[in-house]
Amino acid sequence: MAEEKLVGRVTHYFGKVEAAVIALSDALKVGDTIRIKGKSADFTQPVSSMRIETTVINEAKAGDHVGIKVAQKVHENDSVFKI
Image (cartoon, rainbow, N blue to C red):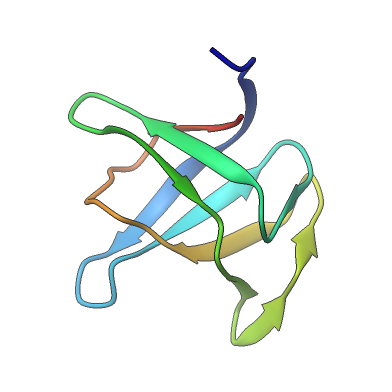
């Protein structure tokens, strides 16, 4: 299995649009594969798009809060790992 590196935590989930806000502790870019793990979530998905506010971005750095579409429901404080 590939090595996982913690890159952030979920701070909010928007159920209607199936998107999560992630507070990044490391860099993340479109095309990376992430694993979201928490009490009720544990899944892997590619990062297909990211936003900061309403601006579409291709990469983000530590300290940024980004929004991404997620494949499943997530919760506040779920861990986000880059694979």
